[in-house]
Length: 632
Image (cartoon, rainbow, N blue to C red; front, side, top):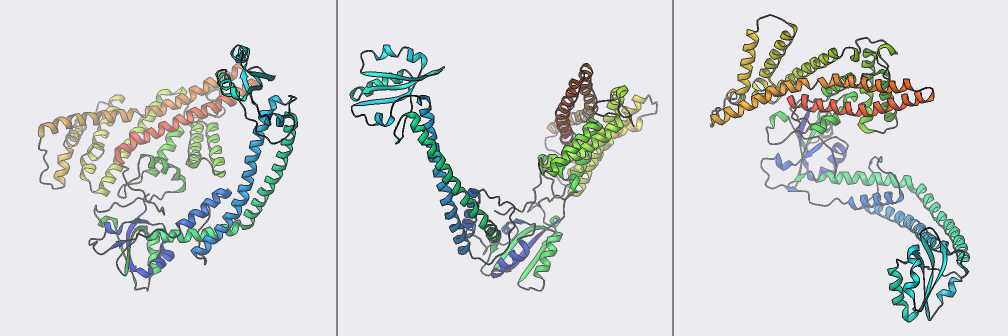
């Protein structure tokens, strides 16, 4: 359902703007409009150009919260006695304190990573009996430590022949040979190029510790233990400071948020020298609240305008208000488009039809109960979004149709756990297909009725009388259905009246555009290029007739998926019967989960497709503007 809104024009003394925003508007659901689009004479009005004075402190609080890992999304704003400077000073002191502790802990972590890298470098040569500090003090000779691919090591001697260099192998594994090479200082550059061509990967040893690689590693591991202890101390102090001041921080942030939003709303006003002017959309409850706020206050004046009287100068936003059970289906409606204010909300209709058709296609008592349980669990855990809430009604519908079909976890017919209250699809295939086509025809007729209702709301005579989804379309489709069913049933009743009804409907649909203009009393109601109009209308009429057939036959898929469900589960049961004991149980569990997952997803998509293409396309435009209360 679409909530009734009014366009509110609120005028008052400029000095009273803060007061009216804080007391009447801040916590109300309103959508602002630019007053200059409503005011006829805009000369003399100025817009609010000042930056929000609380945006800097708001950003600072949020940055600190993010740094500290604090969730502030649920903080509710409230008024407080602190000034902007006091709020800034508090967050500045706190920020400096925790940043100091955090940065010290981070510095120690970086130092630890550096030491761990040195240990990783020294590990392959930990057995070498060489003092690293001795190598670092060499003056007339250079050394390099690293690794060579084994195939390069095998041909190294041929490359280094007659060069003043020596390679000391320390360790060898499947792919690499680790070691040092020594070279005189004046030949270092040339030898480095040769080793590079042999794919030598140099690893840098940066340590001030003395001793062999094993001794250095032990020293560095002890240093890591000391670093861990220091870092833990800083982190503990960080947590203690945060815990001690968290409540105060949150309270101050609530104050910042309050004044930030108050100032953010000011940008929606325009001003004269002494007056402010606000324009916004609000429902009846908010309108009454504002009227109570400004009662007996002559410095304010409020004008409430009905959307129907505004004409086309401004588009009325759409605020949806549906029962909780229908709420998940609003997301599907929004995927197609938001309804116009003067258009019916298709959410309840889609919810009922989607739930009904899903149950028919996925009718299984066991699977339906599983979907219901999953939906309830996800809703309780507050996960899964609107899909979790969607699983509850479709699960109930599937369970009900499972009882009607006599199907539970795929067991039906001779193996049935429960007896059908209606019929079993696999045993009466023709019946399920005919039933779903009949339901589809009824849904299409209902959609055309909705189109007429929308036409009445919009005062659109073409929609009401002459379109393929108006009265002419209903007569055409109903007559064609009656004739088709009568022929199928072998009836010999005369069809003269039916044929006349079809012919008149076709003529009205063919000439719907000029007839609509004539009904609206437009002077130029006949098309200028009559030949082009006749050709275009002929092909459009052909497409309309084709769409009636295809839209109706599309509902065959509902019965087909009911049969498909039974067919997929029969395969699972076949494999179950071929196994014994634990194997049969595993096949049953895996097979049921697979069918529920794959077919549940496909059925959900197919029902949505029927909703969008076979139903919404007949009556729903979905080009409205959503009502929103975002504060920027």
